Length: 369
Length: 86
Ligand SMILES: Cc1cc2nc3c(=O)[nH]c(=O)nc-3n(C[C@H](O)[C@H](O)[C@H](O)COP(=O)(O)OP(=O)(O)OC[C@H]3O[C@@H](n4cnc5c(N)ncnc54)[C@H](O)[C@@H]3O)c2cc1C
Image 1 (cartoon, each protein chain N blue to C red):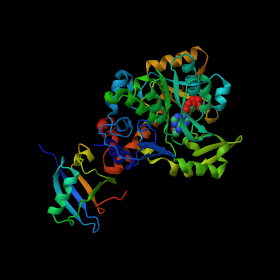
Image 2 (tube, each protein chain N blue to C red):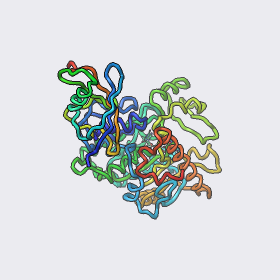
Image 3 (cartoon, chains in turn cyan, yellow):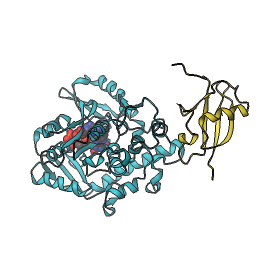
């Protein structure tokens, strides 16, 4: 099947495109406009990288994770698992500009400073809007990307461009689960005759993700409550608050989640991965008995690989990260939340055509949900 | 064994349909002959265009290049304009 045709009919037309950018930066045909993936021309390539790397083309996730992780580390609910930590950046100035505890910023700075990676593929937003992929090569540049944008940018287009240059030997990638899955597809299922040098990806840090939001809708919604250019932070507190917090000029406004839910990208409802299961480390907001006011300045970190373990231990040993005890129920709560997202994905996909869609090749992973 | 595809053609004007079983490796350009044999459309030079899922197919391509390996059927819209002016 032609690659552009396959991607359009199996992903875009089925509302499954996450906008991650894995299909972009490889050829002149694919592009992104305000978070929407567009194809300018049909192409005659039958097995292109665009369709191979797309996280929403049919994928045997079980086979992929067996290739990438030792089987004995894999937990059915949250994927590869070597430990759960509660952490935050020790440096207060990192925390001040970060989404939660600044763990991701601190880890990427450290990895660059220590030469564990020679470039980092991050996402930089204007305040929290209009995000774009950003390739940084100096530790001092990492903070300019701190904070989360809930619009989904095609950051992997910038990764593909950087890989094509073949200049960097170890690129660190930070991304939501759709992006990190695409990165693992690049690494473990490359096209040797059309190499994109994915072997030069040296570290993957995943972000937990409930969903991303429609690009234009977010701008419009934000504009109703604040000057979009002045927004410095947005966050979604735990579900009991049922709100989106928008912070602009030091003032935080709570928006009822009912206004936000219609803006969820349809593709995110078909995503079965909350904890970024394909990664060395996965990072999200902390959940503990201390409550949201404390938790929002901490992260929970799932260690998935030996490399991730080493980086986290180095960060703790060097005093870059602080840790606190994980509540006893922490792992169970995470598993429960993760299963909830998998169930929603299965329901959404089955409602489309009675099948598991792109998850069909690994249907046994989802049969009991 | 030869792979066969059940094709449902949609008429460019009347929206009538024609159902035919065709070999998966048939050239798109050869679909014109099939339509003429069934008197489904008037023969015209240089033939008709064919649209699958919103994509105008290349006359030299084969039908299976527009199908997943599992597909057993497809809907093809016959495109009325014999030539696209450029
Ligand atoms: C769309 C989205 C939904 C999320 N949903 C949840 C959730 O439901 N539950 C939860 O616990 N956590 C969620 N997170 C993760 C959370 O917002 C934080 O990113 C995470 O806790 C790390 O916090 P931090 O303080 O260490 O991040 P920081 O140190 O501030 O670093 C944040 C990093 O995220 C990257 N980034 C920012 N926006 C994006 C984006 N749109 N796409 C890819 N990378 C980006 C930046 O490059 C930066 O390096 C979500 C993140 C995103 C982007």
